[in-house]
Image (tube, rainbow, N blue to C red; front, side):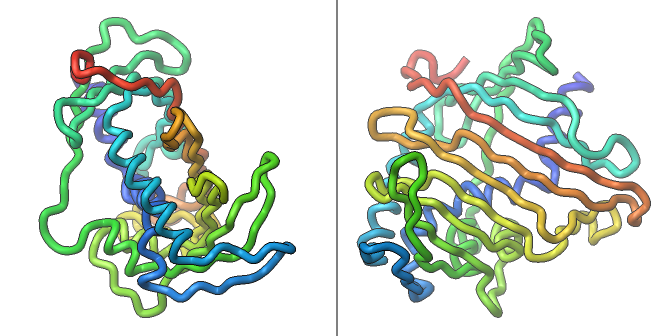
Length: 279
């Protein structure tokens, strides 16, 4: 019981808003043209796509993926992270979970399968419920207001044309949510498969130090990089497959060194039937 409370506490670390910020960045492309004019740069013989139709197609695909994602179960492998400056610091155990959707979109059930490659016997499903913000701006709207976007260039990745969208903090933005405040501390790039109009990768780099506990408990240095990848997992559905966060810094009044090599992988996606939607 104590172990379960400890694991639940770890998942509530300061990385939560950061990971959520990354996951909501791709849908923001559908709103970007309403907030920032695009800077088009022709880097090949073909002109870059027009912003509004391009953003609209990406937005529609992301909206469909968000609707479909709650219908899938999957495996989740994550590197545990310790942020208690008085105890262990940095990354630690590797945990493998089986995740199934619950009876409502905000509910999932997680069963711990292995810890550091060793089976965990008699592990029971743990219910998790995502809180829905009911007051003030949504995390998506607030993050949109904190960033500005522009189509940057075209590249070729794995034999396919990819459009690169650049994002950066919006000057004088005043975000109200934790996700919006976190987003404003990053700039980076979003890779979009041009033919599929699907986000394949997001790479965000911290433009300032990231502080926890007003900088007294921990501070992660400027230049830390977070990377999210998405892949096609069904005929018409693309979903996240990994997120990685590499950083170093100091903790406990800058006395202790902090190294983070955090990763989450999502794989073995499967569409869950109503009969298997909950344990």
